Length: 351
Ligand code: MG
Ligand code: ZN
Image 1: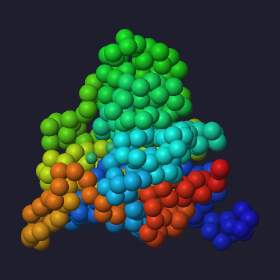
Image 2: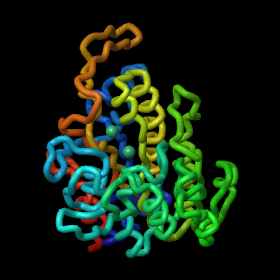
Image 3: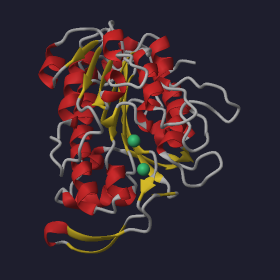
Image 4: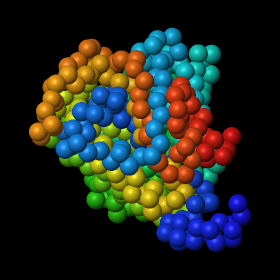
């Protein structure tokens, strides 16, 4: 449809958005680590029977298995979603033929996009690292830190500062990253108008919300969206609710639901942005389920639940994919997790 005809048919749609619907596509991918359907359900009840995911019109299911194992880890599934190929558990950004893969973030950068990564684990943890690193083991944190420091990522927020400035090789990557404004606190992140900004939230892995981490993922996302929105280029942004998985490993339902509620708030920030910027696609999914969680009893009064777990590890159950906005229809149906990459590439329209 040409622009004039579209405007005649849908004038309100065009005026309402800050950017018109035919501007280049912005993508916000939100990954709840370990967030299977039971985690979404438990979190929804803990949140008074509400989740912002109810506003997502398109829902799909993703098969999470790794190359050889039905039960994946976050490295193989992160690589599948970020780079579009199945690989071995523990491996980041490298396929079974030992070839380095390009991630959707890197492809976006090559096509004039800006990019960002916001997580509440360390920034070198498997999920965010699958978008910028190529390493044979997810545990090579100091090498992964080097690869982030050499990457094109424009904005990053996460823990794990020690992998950058207290390293075995004695290097201080924070000093070496002179094209990036590495800020000391969130206020400075908000104020900085540098083109590339890094904010280390903790030296180590951030604590859980129940252990004192402030629930600020939505604030981090909001501040990053303000910056990206002020730039001319479109953007790719990945936001991770990292610790839903850790609650699953701990078989701790309160850990899972408190982390889900924070993540749910961040999803709400992304959704609001997409409602005001029509050239935006929001995808919410998980890399795998953790804990084999079941809700086996509960009462509608206060929506209290009794949870039971099947494993201290991950499970192979399919995970939901919720999508909203332009090109969201691509994400309905049942498909391999590698299709998340291919569908985003199709939506963006680059090779
Ligand atoms: Mg993760
Ligand atoms: Zn895990």
